Length: 240
Image (cartoon, rainbow, N blue to C red; front, side):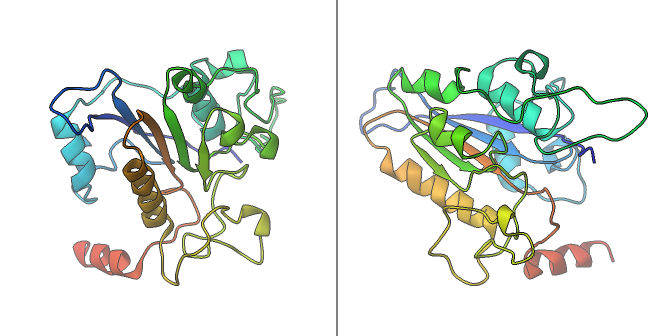
């Protein structure tokens, strides 16, 4: 099955300093949202979905209206962002675990981001950055996890492309291989997007003396389609 993959990337430079001087190395926060359509946010034309925080970032920054993903599916696009190379050069041209069936034979492709590739995290670490990865990885098994690709910490990233559940403990007895790792210590009702955001904010709070690179890669809005009851009720009222 071929998953449609449309993403929005927001690059935000946060200048955090105890003095009035601007640091030479800006802190970098990179947001990646899985399977979000370009018109699924207010500042790009949605009259149904409400995205005030993204709208605020866009108003204070820059919108790219002629940007394109390197691939229509997730893993190749993620590998391209990480390495700066096109999926064809990486020989990673389909979502990892995907197999197209049809009249034409699909191209062979590797199922990981090779360790010999220099990632953006590795490049920034060489320049003195602390690096943190939060959320969906989907670029190979444990031999190729974020902590092997230049990230100091990895919260929630593993080889699968979607979570077993969006609610704590983010596990499923039916498909335990999709259980999201590294998110213990939560509570009933906790939502995955909220937890990943909280973990990312905790990482930012810990960075006082060293510039940081934060890659926040939300699993939402990818399947399984699960939302908080309050959000479901709110948007049901909007369509009445």
